[in-house]
Length: 241
Image (cartoon, rainbow, N blue to C red; front, side, top):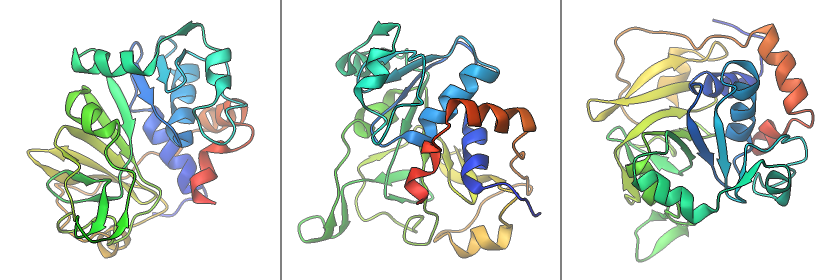
């Protein structure tokens, strides 16, 4: 397939359409893309979605000034209530956090996530931030969605260098495709219309598992128009610049 849409817009709309009305959803720092996707969902099909974030601003009225971090004071100042970060972890451990957006550096076919080191743990080539919220939220949130703006064989590897956390993933969204974790393995869910099976295979370091080749729906005109309203500064593409 071919498409004139930007991969980042396909990713954002795909993530938005994973969210359901009434769900309680959390994003962390440096999470512009999922933050925009949450706002898109809330303005399109999920008006009762509950938006939680690191500053603690519940359902911020606008993300248009969320600036560089997706964790700034704007989200708190425009929120309708305050829900501190420690309560988010407690909510998740009590089984009441529907969706958590999280990151990682390496992933393997068994759903292991590495956010700790590249290379040997004791003498790493690169030491990463570590598990932080992922170690708690991936195992405890009802649905853990990971987004990653890079898709290459160094990111999707045969075996991660270190297991920061594992299991309970739901989806991984990249500029090329969507993976779904089921039956203990990552399966190819959909390929973006800007990519191809051959490109996904060439950039994935493990065997692709799939039943049929399916494509991610292209953004609708209504979705693209709403994206311009909720994200006029194109924060969703910050990580890709």
